[in-house]
Image 1 (cartoon, rainbow, N blue to C red):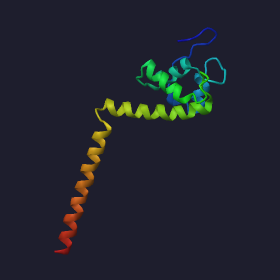
Image 2: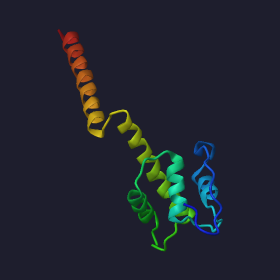
Image 3: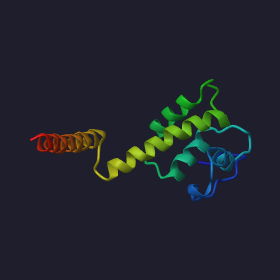
Length: 126
């Protein structure tokens, strides 16, 4: 949603922007040097995150350390790390994987490798 006095932000391939700083500058539609919630939601949308407005507001509030209703570039850099983690978690969920499933698979693989070493050890000492 574009507020009065703000130019709309055109959709962009966010991967073409090289750093969180470039992303911040691009999506700071009114060039105020801070990002408001609407601009932050544009970042979320362009990252391909499927996030409700309420969840976006929670991320924004967490990033807005001084609670002034806007996030600075420094605050955005930290928020961008969280958004990337969220994107990775969504990708795993889209593949039908959960953290529990991944940990279970790793434990199984490590158990199997452990058994192989036990058999090798006993085979060598026999």
